[in-house]
Structures are given as structure tokens and as C-alpha cells.
Image 1 (cartoon, rainbow over the protein chains, first blue to last red):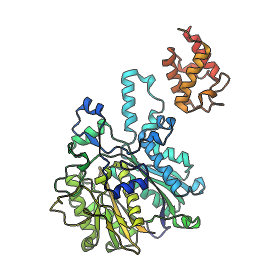
Image 2 (cartoon, each protein chain N blue to C red):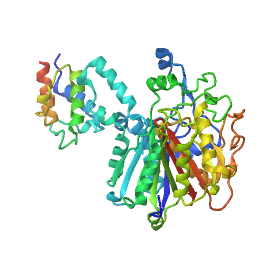
Image 3 (cartoon, rainbow over the protein chains, first blue to last red):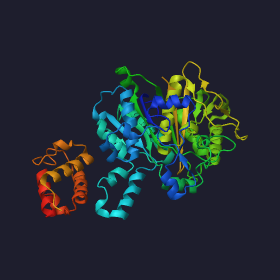
Image 4 (tube, one colour):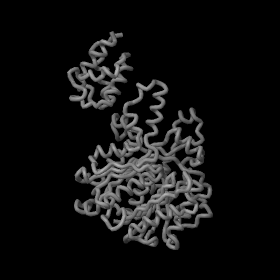
Length: 414
Length: 82
């Protein structure tokens, strides 16, 4: 993202396990709330799942969408629409030619509820009863397609699918396209709705989920010595990205500048990050360099920090590798301790949280960390929130996905 | 058991409303599914399958294209029930 157009964030939208909107989510983060909730009793009775909790949405979509909207869209697309509408309103519904507006909404898994529910219909009632919208509902690009239609985004409708990096990658691609002049405004982010017995069983079988069934709200504890896996979350995070000139010309409020983007692939292992952290570090260094900054300019990292034993340790290694001596000037937080891991929405939500962090100049603390892993010696924000100083600041958000996808985003105060 | 035209119309209107959000009161015998009610072919198939279940009839795919108006569908269902 070299010296082309500057890109800024002018609207925020989110529906998460701790809030029905982006501001509600921010307030819940500052209150240290966990989004963990018990799974539906009928699932537990039927399947004897090894994990009995997840971070399901705080606000049921039926409270804000019509019956027909619910019926004709998979939950993952419903969440994206909710977040996109909020972000668009928050941005002041900018007037924009359709050919200059693009949509980019990533997801890790797509319409898994529709896929599995309709498979049940096929087995129980036969092919004629399979819902005609099955395919357009389960396809991972349905969220970006629906949002493109609703907001008349005709510059393009894109869907990055890179597991837990999908949301950050989609935002990054949208920002790059604005930089290149392909659009002036973008609706971009990520969404996921994978709280269903099959993904839960699959993640649990791969030993990725916390099994702290006696303490769901304490389950997600990034960097803790006794961390044992992630808390499965769901939801969506969507922003309005805009060229600086366009935002300035219409007098839009600016939360932060989308200043830098780094992307890399580990080419190492399908689920584990490279323990040397070379790929992750390369993404971080590229993000910093593309913002025209040095590692010493970054004051804070909203870490990927999912609370898995291996993943958290690998990220610490790669942060040290990327920052070198400048790592002493960086404080880290892991907001998945509260939101859970929103998979394909995680990177987008954390970029939103980072924009709020810079806007309010407060770093929310990581909850549930009483005993820090003795191997981790970085400045972790775990006891109290951290107030950031005045002046021009830059901070980073990381998102890494199964498949070896690494995305780092650098935001600056506006 | 055969149902009256009014009963079938009411049942069909409920199905149309459930699937598309079109006000049930707008689903009248003289209304065209595509022209007046803005129902696309995907929604039409869902309506047909739900109508088959609700009214205990079978509407082959080849016959669906002949059901231009709500009245056509009501008449078809009524005949199929006899």
C-alpha cells in the first residue's frame, strides 16, 4: 500500500457475543464482560459434546431483522447485514455513485447452518423439499452479495476466505482497492455463524477449544499459564472505509486511518503457525512499512491471542521477531478473552476494537489472566485498562488463520 | 377433502406472506405472482412445495409455469383436491 490514496475508517458496525452494536461491544469490553454462554440443552442431550459452551450473540437477529430476512439468509449473512447497516448509518450514509462503492465481507466457513439443516431436510423429506435458496444461502459470498445489493455497491463484491484471517483480509483488500483508485468507499469486514454441533465437534476433536466446562466465562484466557484452547464465538464486524479526500469533502467523522496492511503465508502446517514466527513477523513488518512507519512507532498490538497453548506462544515469538528492541514500547491485549473467537469475523472485529481504542485512547484489558505464562515476558494489559498518550499514535491488529494465512493491519489516530 | 376457494386462498396467502413478506391481504385471485406480487422463480418454487404439503396435492414443475395468477393456483389446487 505505497504512496497512493489515504484510507480512513468512517463507520463502525458490529454484532457480537457481548453487544448488539459496536458501541455496546466497546462498553462491554471496558466492563470486562465475557460472552460465554451454555450451549442449547437439546444439543448437549443429543450429542454429548465435549465442550458445553460458546459465545453466542448477545442480541438475537430476530430483534432487528424481519421474519423474511431471517428466513432467506443464513445466520452468517444475517449478522453481516446487521453490522453493515449499523456501519453505514454510523458513517452518515455517504452519497456515493454505485460504481465507486464496493463490498468486501469475508467468512471462514460460510452458511454451515443452511448446509446441515438442508441436508437433514433431504434425508427426512427428500429432494423436492430442499429449500430453493439453499445454494445462495450457504455460499460464502452470499453476505457480500446481499450487502452489495442492499447498498448498490457496484465497484465489486468480494469475499476473502482465509479462516480466522478472513475479516481482516477482506478489510485489507477493500482498503487496497480504495488506495488504487478502484473505489472511493467500501463496506468491509467479516462475519461468522458456526456455533453448531458439527463445527464444535470438529474444533474440539482437533483440540482447539477450551474444555473449561465448569467455568465458561473464564475459559478464554490468552497468555495464561493454564490456557487450554479458544472460546468459540460468532458475529460480524463491518466498517465503512473511505478515501481521505472523500471523507474530508463530506465532513465525515474519522475514527482512525487505515494506514498499513501486511499479508503473508506460512506454507508450514494446515493448523499450526510456524513456531519460528517468520511468516507472521513478515506480515507485521510489511504492515508497519506500508504505513510509512518504524516498529518503534507502534504503541499497541491487539493480538490474535486465541488462548490456545501453541498459537499464543507462536504469536509472542513473531511479535518479538517483528519488533526487535522496539517490542518494549508495545503493550498487548487479547480481546478474545471477552468476545470469544469469532473466526472469520475476528480480524474485522478486532480492527474495529483497535479503531475504538485509538479513538478513545484506552486499551481494554485482557480478562481471566491471573497467572501469566512464565515464558511470556511482554507488556500485557491484564490488570487494568491502559490509557494511551495524546498525539499521533499507531497501533496494530493481527489475524492468523488455519491454512497459514497471516494478516496484520496498522491503524493511526485521525 | 376438498376445501373452498376462500379457504385455499387464505392458506395460500399465508404461505406467500411467510416466504416473501407480501401482505396476505394483497394476495387476491386476480393478482399475478410475478407482475403484481414481485415473486421470483425461486420463491415461487418454495410457495409451490409448501402449498403441496399444506393442501395435500402434487403440482408438477411443468405445471408451475402455467400458474400466472393467484386465481390460477387456487383453481389448480381445488381441482387437484377433487
